[in-house]
Length: 61
Image 1 (spheres, helix red, strand yellow):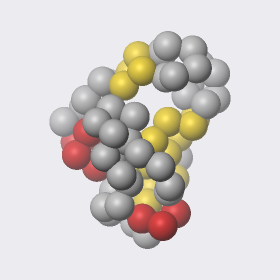
Image 2 (cartoon, helix red, strand yellow):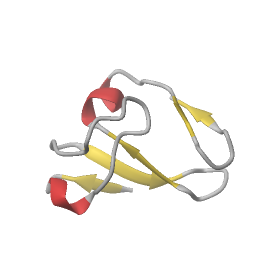
Image 3 (cartoon, helix red, strand yellow):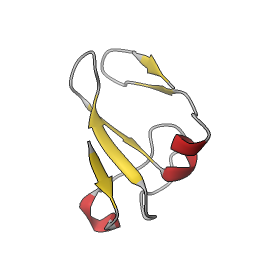
């Protein structure tokens, strides 16, 4: 997992809300099922918003 204390480390948008990943606490991690990179903003992580992997359909908290 990459924890983006430096937001320039992660590019793209949150898979849950679509927000640009520009704040501290954003993360990128491989999907546990297929390895596709999942990107999440701090807000969606904190409220455990669901996400769905675009490649394999795995749903996560």
